[in-house]
Length: 108
Image (cartoon, rainbow, N blue to C red):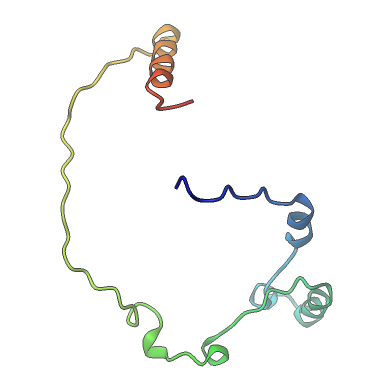
């Protein structure tokens, strides 16, 4: 959208800090999982996980059966061939194609 703010670039220091963050379920397969979880929690790198009991969710409202989405109608779209241009796989023709796409503001 034209009115949306431009996103700020990701900070490299923050990316490097949190690249080693893990959740408890990722570490369960390790023998020393509890030790690793404690270390991550101390460093602030443990990703908290919630389950149905933690958020007191009703199981009937979760998953596919709990989804309120209803399909009203399915519309089939058939694409028909229109105007086309054949481009030979030569450097000259590819060069012309790129310039044409730039002039049409398709790319660039």
